[in-house]
Length: 504
Ligand code: G6P
Image (cartoon, rainbow, N blue to C red):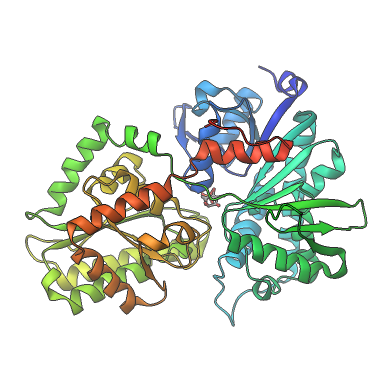
């Protein structure tokens, strides 16, 4: 298939995100090996393949991807991508690096997750301006590809903070399109967002307000966005409430052309059918057996966490809380094991490499302090292995999800669905998932290590009946909006169609 013919075909539904459903590794002998991407965005969107014939536009992320683009013209067929039609864009490596590493992941991710360590950060200097220019170029490359590939009146669903400028750019190029934007992250409170240079704040909010619909994972993030738009855009922005009482909206009166952006909340849930089926395959059973051997001892309890090695996931404080538990509650020594799976992420950034080393150091320190001949208190695994994650989910007595801030956190939703014997959930109040799961979880302040240790003790001590009952309620809440429905609801809304019964 040539690039030209795919473009001419004109898609009715397009999805755009930085990371696509697959990424390719390039072996020394020239073979390309496909690997599924990590993170909530890919988990949510991977379900759309069988439901729509959407074309997923994404960026080439490394040398393997660039080679795949050279060989295919960027048009990847469903057989190679896990059921998805994919158009991969080969944006020049230095432009992509500045946009992805320096702006998206070092500035926007940090702002929305409130990760800066003042007084040294952030510094918006001349170098930042150069990187910002690359972010604009990269967003424009997506806007161009979408404008080219979309049929008249098509629906375009743009994803995440990497592509915040795309809705505005695309509206200018193709006013006929229906455009949505979805934020998979939190949105910063207005006072925190205000640390960005004023013109950048305006560009980011106006970029998203180029969409007909700006969607968020929780009401809290949606409200923050509206507040940022109101503060940053002054008189150009007005909050209006539709008669039917649906979520608040922002009416924008920009220099260009007036239109209304509706603000929506769509809380992505776990895919119970997929997870339960996948978690009972032989490769998962094998890994469960291996983990049981590693855990050792009869009847030991397990505390499980599975994350990208990500600053906002708060892995180090989670380990410190476990260490505090062993100090405060000696009765748990030898009787509990912490399975901590921390998979490498964004390793181009020094701060992520340092954090990865710190996680390793703290885990080793706990093992050195408390470990005995027959008991290793922390089993830290860093090699990404989805089957082993599912094995740990099934073995979990307690799930630890303690992010500093998190758009949703799908792990909190997945573990209760898959756990064999039921698991208690220790959950940060700052995870988006807390809005839906908080009533059945043990809530923690992510900064409070002593409080988290107490919650771990409570979770480990919970009687079997209560744990099972809570797990059932957690699983029900976690699967209320499975990915395919989450996507189709947004698509229907964007097209102005009424919700239909039974579409999943
Ligand atoms: C979060 C973001 C996604 C991103 C994922 C993995 O979930 O919202 O957009 O894809 O993290 O991060 P990465 O940088 O590896 O794509």
